[in-house]
Each structure stands twice: as C-alpha cells, then as structure tokens.
Length: 164
Image (cartoon, rainbow, N blue to C red; front, top):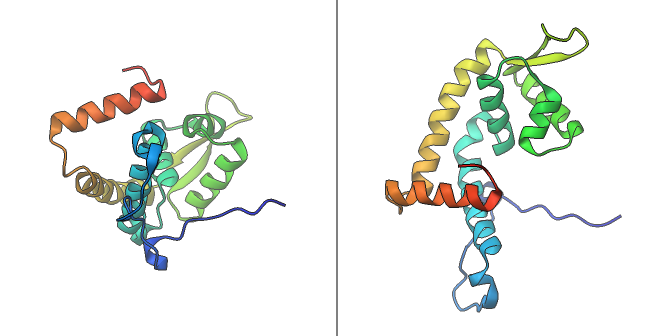
C-alpha cells in the first residue's frame, strides 16, 4: 500500500512558509501551478483556523452554499459540481447531516431520488459561517485592490476553463 501524507495544520503546530529564506526554488517560482498551490496552502491554513468553531472545511462550505442556493439538489449532482466521487459526496453529506446542517428530502420530481436541503440550523449557521469566510477572504486578499482581486478571480476562472 502506498504511503499517503497529510499536511499538518497550524493548529497542530506546523505553519506553511511560502518562501523559506535562503532556498533557491529554481523553476518553481515561474510555474503557474506551483504559484497557485503555494497560495492555496496559505489560504487553506487561514480558512481552517477561521472556521474551526464550526468544524467547516472548504468542501463542507462549498456544499452548504450550493445546497442552500439549489434546494432539492441530488447528491450525485452535488458531487459532480464539487468535483468529487459520488461516494465522497455521500460522506460529505453524511457529515453535514450529523452536524445538523443538511437533510435528505424525498424528491418531488423523482420518488426514487432524494433531494438535499438545509435545516433551519443549517440556514442560521450558514449566515455566520459565510461572514467568517468573507472576513477570511478579505484578510487573504488584503494586498490587492478591488480591480486586482476581480482580475485574479477572472484569470483563475480562465485557467480552470470556467466561462466568464
């Protein structure tokens, strides 16, 4: 079995340093992918710290937002939207259901299927969670003005192949 590694979080006593002094990064400093990954690690570390009171991870937040905006969404479509396997979507929804934020509801369109919806607690907590995520996003993009921030988001969408 191949060994897997998991990055320790700042809460576990490890902090990501995006540029260790005295280290020659060579071609890495010119690669888009490495730059995106470096930024993602810094952003992820702050996100996890900011959302620790709710035990919300980026996939959990994304799922809550998509479910809130699309009541009755099928689990298989949620998994597709998030870019995860259906089995991963099941685990994600199970966790959100155990947290009391999401419920499975009988689909009105297809009696064989279940739709997803937020519970009252899910709607209430999503407001507070979204405020914390918004504060996190402002903190992580504080060195950019609004035009630069919009440009960066647009460029990342283009790299990902998302229609603008």
